[in-house]
Image (tube, rainbow, N blue to C red; front, side, top):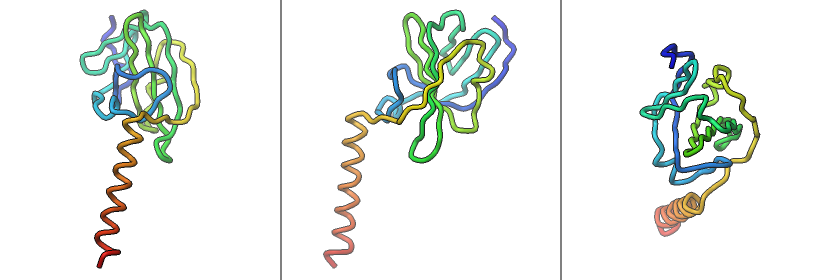
Length: 134
């Protein structure tokens, strides 16, 4: 394995999601770290994925609210990894593997939906108690 680093950037990463990106507790609890691309592998924290182990790779282009983001999914024989990148991060041009690009709409898990509804109700109750009951 080569130790020549081609690119590195900050990422959020999870092994608990696969398929189209979505808001979920898995991303809330995801690993934060440095994503580094080397000649024949990628590394994020203690995860090291050889290009030769990757069975499929897909780059999802989506938006979080109105901000464009990219999610890279790398699948090996035993694991599926997803890495979320800010719009200015571009490790993809340095990857020595073929990957599919797909534009998708960000999905939402049941947990995420319930959390957003609870937050909205809380804000509504605060508004009512502060401004309407006075």
